[in-house]
Image (cartoon, rainbow over all chains, first blue to last red; front, top):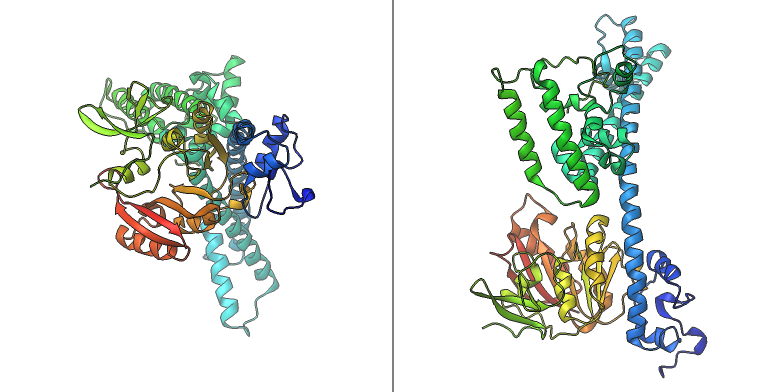
Length: 315
Length: 211
């Protein structure tokens, strides 16, 4: 077949060297994991090596292998992406909680030493920067070992807070890739939270709207089911302006309408992946309608009621 | 005035206008005329390049490497008139649709690979392809073309649609194109360029051959 001088032992079935022609599974693995520094005339080599009867035969085998590899690869990578989002959201919450807790410690400690001590993560940042500069400028000014420790702790807080910001930026960038409709409707961070609470995009897509409505309000929900409390009207979706910005007596309706559309968005994202902007528009109209019913516009005060949802996310 | 179309691509009348069409299984609900299906220049940059009268140097039955196949809209038409067609796309979601397109076409090979890393598909894509069609929406489009030049035959053609917004949304598209073409000239001789308006805003069609 070939008379270009390649010795028999260097002849190969091209990219499929060592793979049996009828082993589609091994072929697909080669498609996914193989490497080469440069292309070659693979069809001709495959025929020369007896891997394929002719070029048409080679192309048929290649097609089977690439189809199977693309199917497997695509579904694996999609599964992986929503799980990465789940980890990122949980990490962001952990890091934020750590920053807040340590910032309290810094504030308490600093209050015992400086009359102008403030509180919170912002003060810890301030302390970390201010003291950092002072010690660099004048190396003769002796920093007390106590201040050294306090400032070092403040720097940890600033680092945690920075990491939380970077995780949030990551989530804002990644969520629209994984769940474009959900991200557009709820905002990327709330969308990622819903995916995280459900345990993944697939299980979120399979949940009824009523469950989506109270995701994140499990404590209140179980209190209700034990007969000790009213049913929760909303879970983590309370953090969205559509719910929080609606006046309290209409919030249940707003939450139900919002959750209904979110459930649809999650299904579109999981099963098709196409962007459907009309969903956002339908929801916007519905919320306006709810807010307009029997009264003058919405006027939420931002206080939670009977939710058990984690607060602090002002999406 | 216009260059000859590749064999397998014809102008047929749709809605009272002569428009491009290829023969194959419909894939995205496009209008059909018998077994001919409309190849809409508004949806496909390669079709826009043909409509603009650029000489893409395709005759039909060529081996093609398609970079940035997305869900397979354009590559389905390419596979209708070309020979073996290797379709590279990195985003998993559109690849699901691309697989559907490939299932109806014997000569289309979907590859879920990063066009910036040709060593991950050099073991599959044959050497000396006749054309590289490039439609990637990432920064460094010229670099992608350069790194994939190794697949192209000496007299092969690069048919690229450069997207200004992918390089820099803040700068003037003309400036962006000039810089991208300068980069491209390190590994290609640029034969022809044309803006793809009115079909695609801020896109430049480029026909080039390897140096």
